[in-house]
Length: 568
Length: 57
View 1: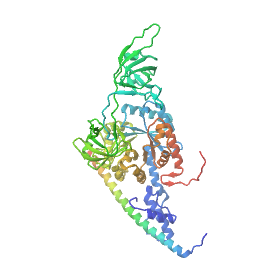
View 2: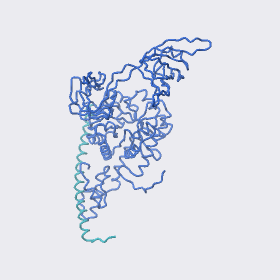
View 3: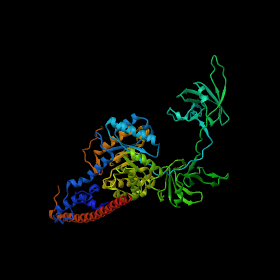
């Protein structure tokens, strides 16, 4: 139906008071038949019986099938909830059972494990916690294991010499008003204190001699004498340390322990060396018009080099974790870096890599980091849909997951491949969620859906992160609608994903547009939240918004509940 | 309420409805033909998949 432009016909139907077929996706022919039948009766035209007499049950059959498919994928709803909530599990959920139980009690009905992070032991712990919480709460929670796909990211960046700048706090006049703090640790693998403070390793011999009030003297990189004062013990291995002035502390530098004099002991200074720590990556800043060389992964990134007269000698360069991709690029094709923060176009292919011209970056430039996403929306990367790691992860997922998530699926052949791999692992019964995150996947979605219908249990995830980078933010709003209605026509459940109530989950307070987005998400069968310290608040807020919206809107159906303005 | 000249308006309204009926009937038939073609293609895909599975066994 959506191959035709029906807008004019819709206008005419609405003008004569008939259904304008705006909600026909789930039962196209039945909806047409119903309107045709009314028109035939009204005009007295003899039926040529090209249409059937409408049957109320058949008009509703599409939404019934969708409900059935949704229940098969995500299980039942609880209490008065009307949406399934999927949550990406943090590593904390592997070790914090109470949190997992609370998530189920708040309304999570699907736990998502992202195979791009952590390992089998963490995944196993998460699954055990979810299963235990299911049994204790009596609520079911499906486990989705998301195969990560190929890792297309920026490579490592050369590190600066390892010096840590410990900063004291100053007022607007530059007067020091508070000391700077760091942590000395005798064992970095046993960090118990949840702190963002910088940690410097120390030898165990020094650790044993430390006590609150002790001082460590050092000569910093500015050749200034600085004193680190031991404030308190944070754990059996860690000490909180203050310094009254700014200090540039070199990795492995010499320190002199000045212990407090007591009545019976003399002050005997002892010399130690701090442990070694890594330097920070050098700063690579890119502005519109700059050049960037995208190289193979083994070459570490560096900023541009200029002669003393300011002439560019060598452009900035950065590696790509999948080096073979560079050979597939062609001049004129676009490249997006770090979730679209930096836009570029391929200028030429050289022996060293692909030379890019930066076409989009915020005023003042954007710092290029390692391990950030790379997108090549115009390039046929010819990568197999499943990476070697995906196949290894599938061995585990086939035994432990309820649903398999398929990242970067682009064609029906990709789906066939995953289904065949699942069959080899005797996991054909598991549903697949096809994550639509590229331009090619959007174009091929009708084929993917039609080819999968009746053969695999399928869901679709609108993965708006990479999709937005590929399509551009402006087109995303339009495309996510089309995907939603296409899936409704095929009676396939949709997961609305990426950045839903993101600020709420991460900072505890969502912006107003985020609530509007969450309200739009109510038209999908499941909504995904990302991990964050305020995830319980985010689940509660999401369910609240969705339940309210369901009173006004079901899929495309605007429900005319009596208006009310009471605050409740 | 305004009084409408019944016969003339009724005729033009009926004509509009008849046009809509014709338009929708044509569309409906085209969509039905398309749907049948699609079903055929899905059938072929399913058969091919079964054949491939049978061969691999």
